[in-house]
Image (cartoon, rainbow, N blue to C red; front, side, top):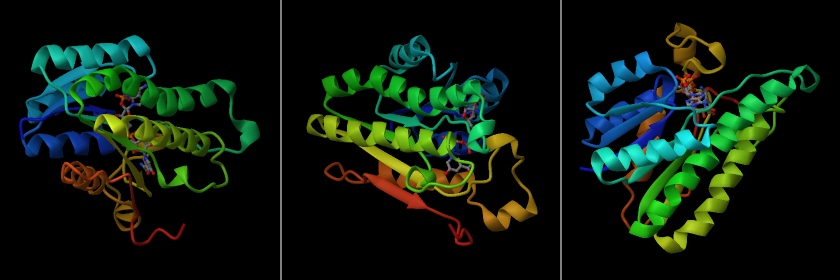
Length: 231
Ligand code: NJP
């Protein structure tokens, strides 16, 4: 395809896998994250664009969309994947940690959607894919901050889906279970995680699946888990 896709959180983990798969399929990928070196390494492989940006900053979000349009003259797909999390008992979360999680996961998704929706409405077309989590639909101990942010991110995407559907715009939400990434300061690639976690590429395949739905079909929600995950 000659489609153009923005992917946030592309410097590692799930976003990197999504960027590589979309590029392999012929899309022009605009990879967004704060880590410049990792973005350069990625764009060497994707032959796309890398933009250093903080998803929690509105001017950055506006810049990412404007720069994509300046470089490629079109935009078809936006993947809101950037996210952070940490896990603790409620009373041990600092105010700052709560804000970091909500600013990235909720406001980050809101701001990029806000920047892109007017453009998608004008062209009466476009696909927003949000990477939330299975914990957007279930609560768990130590999840007051992260889980709450994923419920909120899911609500942003679900509400937006209903607003933009009449304009021909699709919003698909992906809910992965455990994925072997750098999330919460873990190191991917362990023999243990290979048995218990999805690979980033598994989530990338789910994104590909929702993007390949026929023009008249929108896949609203897609949840996937490793077969070993019990909750
Ligand atoms: O995590 P990780 P994942 N502005 O840490 C970027 C969800 N999820 O791939 O800015 C811009 O390897 C960061 O880049 P950098 C999860 O909630 C995961 O697992 O350079 N980018 C990096 O590229 C999240 O929404 C699991 O530090 C920012 C990326 O985000 C998504 O999957 C399970 C940023 C994080 O890569 C991807 O996370 C689940 C900012 N302010 C859902 N802050 C799981 N791993 O088990 C961070 O259900 N990034």
